[in-house]
Image (cartoon, rainbow, N blue to C red; front, side, top):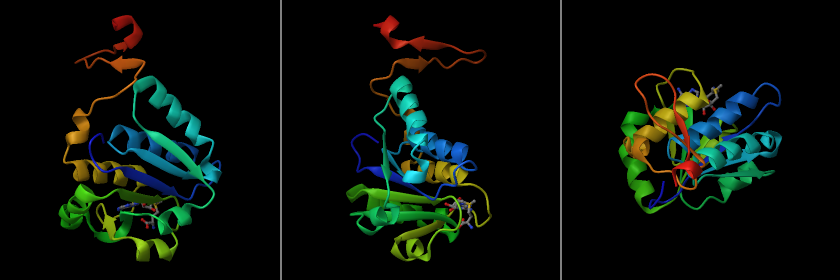
Length: 181
Ligand code: SAM
């Protein structure tokens, strides 16, 4: 988020056809809940446009990058690394240390699609489970980011948005910000 070291989400793996919506939703969740950037592998390049389109309409900043060397990104990362995995240590036991690390340096958050190479477990500073039950990378990322930011991401501001949702108890209202100016 603004005024903090960057949080970058690395989405490892993407099965074309099967993972299209999951990868899109990893990106949308990363953006909505306070991450600064998403890194996709080239098999998922088609998802970039959808996430960028949402950022263009509803605001940022949020970047999406595509790489043909996702593990290279992990190896060369200069900062802390948290890998979300059902086999990891409970997020509630490690979140203080992760927040402390993120106060001073960028944080890479790794989520998988299928089996993640063992190198990721070795390279990560924190292998973190959001429960030790199997569920989804989207759910794990959402809970993790909310714990990391302690809820501050819910009140963040959005820059350069074309549209804004006006919260309502019932019904839907979306305003065009050009009309408001
Ligand atoms: N066996 C995998 C694992 O290591 O968690 C489950 C694969 S799951 C379909 C895809 C991704 O969801 C995983 O790579 C992991 O990032 C995330 N995930 C699933 N369950 C999780 C949990 N309980 N805690 C943290 N991350 C989880």
